[in-house]
Length: 46
Image (cartoon, one colour):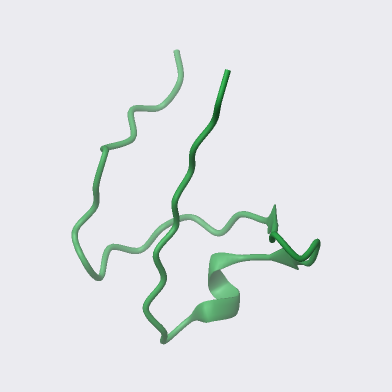
């Protein structure tokens, strides 16, 4: 069974580090933005 992930998280909540490709093709991680505000939107179309 997949992990349950809340639809939203409180500000300041630490998230696991993962790696994604940015719209410019660069690989980025949440830890690259440590100390800055970070908003992540995931979406899909199928």
